[in-house]
Image 1 (cartoon, helix red, strand yellow):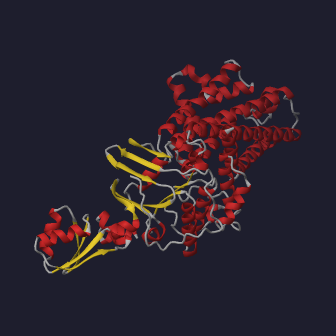
Image 2 (cartoon, one colour; image 1 turned 60 degrees about the vertical axis):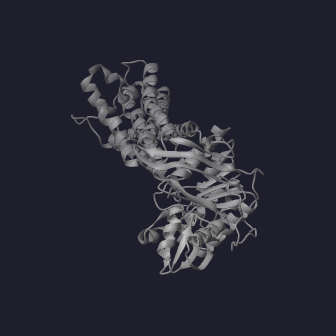
Image 3 (tube, chains in turn red, orange; image 1 turned 45 degrees about the vertical axis):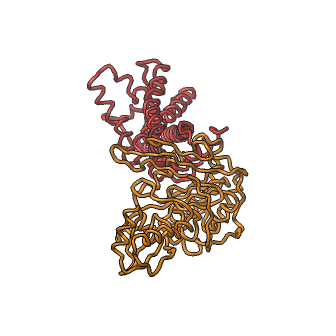
Length: 248
Length: 327
């Protein structure tokens, strides 16, 4: 009962500021850019080979890594601003057992990240599908694969939001949390791969492509598990830190 | 300690205003701080602090900036962990209270809301988290005079409106215990009067009201008891009326000799005029006896009711500059 109340409260927090609308606006822009790429983009040889096959189109609409990264920023901002605006004070007063409050927060941002990612993936699929008739190619991706793209985006969005929320609860400063989240998604993986070549399969971008069905160098369950680990490590660290740290 | 004496010549109103509410649970809660110490590295912010806040009274919590008041309040609410000692509310840690927000209403950070969120939504979030009926939100907005501004974003609120929103949040659960950090900041005279009436009414109904403030004149009108800390340590505590009467004015031609005699006996002497001193820490009979024993003629020996500001500065040994800050 307490958890349900806390989750409802956290969801209301997310839906009573303009932040989700800002993310939806970004998702619309991303979908529009995809549509523009289909309409106006060409390969080096001037052809439209990049949309010629089902696999090409699937790669174009695979949204899971965008979802993972975008929802990561969403989670990081949503949680870090709680500390920045001191709204964490009434939160911890309502739930002095802090791990409950944090779990409710993680559940809410995971839900928000999942929904935003589904919207983003849906908009991208729709934009590409609507843009393809302007070319010589039809929409070749099967319904099953579209559903898999949507499911992968939803899952990656939820996981990314949890990862970002963990970083937000560790850093507590929106600018710092966003910077570290971007570093985690964009900077750290290439550096790690340079140091250990065989880790490439386990980096978020590849894992997202695996669950979207565009690559298959590791199994789907392994990719899902690895994404969960990526999400849970900062979330658990954040949970431990929040439990021990004073609210100052 | 538990303060038991009553406020004597209080000028505060005790009539119950329309927004005063009965103590929800019917229980009376003592807030106790027992040997609490808080260290940040080598820096001691609160140093072996002990006091208790009784129900049915308004207790003012005073101290200069940086004296540890906010930290102490955060420890009471489990927002900060004590390095040593413990703070309890009705015998339990805040975190162990079965329904904390219906037991304790607190305002620790005056701007603890998202600036882009409306006042109503801020309260709805708290109502959701605590299981309080949503109808209560509109009641509270009306009680603190924010109904018209309820749907405006809180970031556009004036300081006084933010204070009232914080107060509404604290009162949402009809808690028997109120812990408020500087609730009067930014309020206009009408708002301060309303706040005072509300807090006095809560105490009159058996509530435990603990209020920190830098508005000493306001505390003087509001509080039954005061607890004063400085550098994290307890300086004094007790019924405000008694503390105000607990100094003695002595007029004599032999000020220096009398001051020496009384200081050796453990009293604290403050200059008051060319031929008079204020004596603290010794009752009036003893002052007379000591003077008589030393053969010092006294021209006046009277209980002196100091203003709270005067007492505060004596308690905390503040300079005039600090006095300005505190006021």
